[in-house]
Amino acid sequence: MCYYCRVKHLIYDRVVSGPRMTILCVVSGSGTNYREIVKKNPNHNYVVFTNRPECGGAAIARENGHELIVLSHIPYLREARKKYGAGNVPRNAPERIRYEQDIFNLVEDRIKKQPDLICLAGYDQWTTDWMVDRYYPRILNVHPGDTTKGYVGLHWVPSAKAILAGDEAVRSTLFIVDKGEDTGPVLVQSRPLNIVQTLKELESKGTSGLVDGLLRVSSYARLRGITTYDEFKQGAGGKLLQVMERICTGLQDALKVAGDWVIYPFAVHDLLGRGRVEVDGRAVYVDGKQLPGHGWRMDEHPA
Image 1 (cartoon, rainbow, N blue to C red):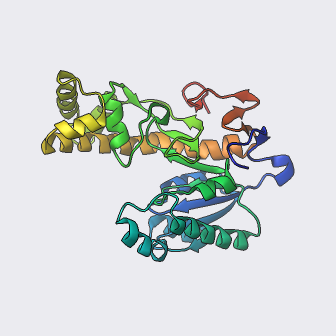
Image 2 (image 1 turned 120 degrees about the horizontal axis):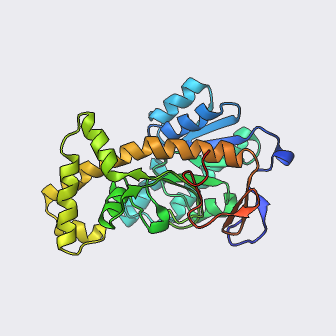
């Protein structure tokens, strides 16, 4: 059901489908989000797909004895990269769509149905509109930043955006994947992670200079009226960018543990797996009550 349709329904209906979900975890890297989802409740039917068979997530799947499906993206995108240029293959390029269609032909042939949930757990390829049209609202992704504030981007950039906006804390966001870039309806957000306190804790564990570095980048931005990452990137020198990267890499690592690894398993098992989540177009409901735009915040609704 596409997200343009407005028919209120459960994402996962335990009465119809039973208590055991078939969960497809899609991984390209370490697989730690997949690991944490399984750790919270291993008693579901897990299938793992990867485009990188030597990645950590694939190794975890083998250790767990979960069905592992592998299909490399490289042959599909080789000609597309020549046509569009490396790093410029459009999100909905025919080659990407063909790749996804072949992935899910393999998956559905193996499990003999559509997966109940698709958890993007560190997947390094774009999802296409074809995939969203076929599986919305059953595709989930987690982002190490507050997507409702536009703190998107790769790696440590979301934390940099929060710092430059003057935020005191950062959050992780678990959302339903739509056709935009981290723009899907928010299901869960983590508790806020205080920036200064986190940097002090990292310093106490041996990573020096983080708090002073934060003062440097904040002072530089404030004196110049800089409030966005693009402005900072254009004006700051290489050394100051390195300081920002070091600070934000530490924040992102801490947020992964305190945020991502908490909200992803919670959303999958405590909300969706218990048949508590409904959608009506882009509106999300838990226990019959519509969630605000920022979703279910863990500090407002403790697990």
